[in-house]
Every structure is written in structure tokens, then in C-alpha cells.
Image (cartoon, rainbow, N blue to C red; front, side):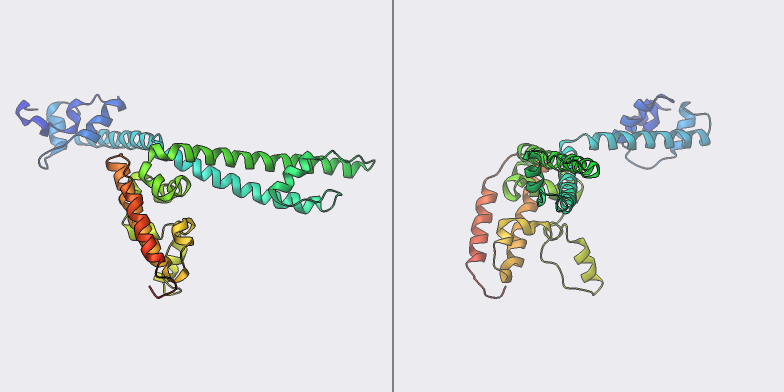
Length: 290
């Protein structure tokens, strides 16, 4: 290949066939000023003997690059937080489901309890002695199940604490405006901090309300005013007639916060102050129409 072609020599000019490590940089970082007959140039340069081999090399290179990018993406801090909050949700859900089973099961014994706190209470009690072999065996399993409930609840608490500790570093502005747990949940729903930063505020406003939104688009319901951001005190604590306005105001600041976190990374307290002022104005309207 002619040396004067510079950056247009082709992505294959710096690769070693059979060495995927050399493919990734060539595909991910390469560029060209204009289209060209790349198979012909690859053959001309001696990298491949024919067009069929060129496309085999290109296929292997794009696959290697995609795998490397997926690995890199999965190892980012926001992806770790996504796994963390999904694990927290899973453990909370399973703990509550099993706690219901413990509650129902305990009603057949002399130590009827209710909920996760009931499972903890069950473990704190002295075991009931009985000569009934079936009762003794099943009571033992009930206690074992209660132990699992408590362990899952403790795990959920530990995961929540990890999120609360990590979010201010990963996304300081989103954590400030939304709170660590809600901020992490928005990142998870969007698929990552970068994806969230690219979302318009209107989409952020209804994240988590996709079923209601699709029903509205299909003509089966009204448009949702909010998704998971409803749990934020500025939405749930606002009069129902003004919640739509509060949700829009919050979503607008969340969109800005996510963009600053992704593209800049510095914490900007003015975002919170501006949101506080806007919500105070909205809430002062009382029960009037939006």
C-alpha cells in the first residue's frame, strides 16, 4: 500500500491476522476521510490473499471489538451500581415473599409472627420442645426459613448502604437531586449513566411507567404524569393537581444533572437550589388547576 495514503491506509494496516488484540484499536479508533475499495487495498498491501479472506478478517475484527466494548462497559462504575440496585430489589422482593410464607407457616404453631420483623422475632425465641416428630422437624425448617428471610433482608440493607455510599462519587449531581437510591434506579432503567444523559427530560419523567405509557399510546388510558420519580418527596409530597408540574420540574433538573455527571463530573449545588425554588412555587398554588 502506498505510504502517502496516511490515515486512509485502512483499518487492517496495523493488525496482525490471528491476534484479536490488534483488531480492537484498529476498528475502534480508526478513521478515513472518504470511502474506498478496502478489500482491494487489503489485498494490495498483502494483509490478505483475497476478498473472501478480507471479509473473514473484518468479521473477526468487529466481533473482537464488540466483545471488548461490552467488557469495558460492564466494568464501569455505573454498571456496577446497576447490578447493585437490581440485586437490592431482588433480595427485598424475595425476602418479603418468604416472610409471607413464614407468617402463614407460623400460624400453625404456638409462635405466630408477621412480616420480616416477625421472622426476626421468631429467631429470638427459644425453640419449643415437643415430642411430636413431625412438629419438631417442620418447626426446625420454619426457623431455617426465617433465617433466610433475615439474611436476605440484611443483604438488601447492605446493598442499599453501598448504593448510598457510591452514588455521590459516580453521579454527584444526580445523587444530590434525586437521592442516591432513586438516582441509581434511574441509571438502571436507562441502561447506564451515558444513556440517561442522552434522554430528554420528558422520557426521564416517565421512566418506570412504560406499561402505562404504552397503554396511553394504544388509546387505553391517560398519559402518565410520572414513573419512578413519584417516590421523590417533591412529587409524592405535592398536591395531586400539581404533581404533573412538580414531576416536569424534577425531571428537567434530573436531565441536566445526568448530563453534567456524564460529560463534566463536577458537583453543582445550584441545581438543587433552583429545583427547591421551582417546587416551592408549584406547591404554593395549592389545589388549583395545573
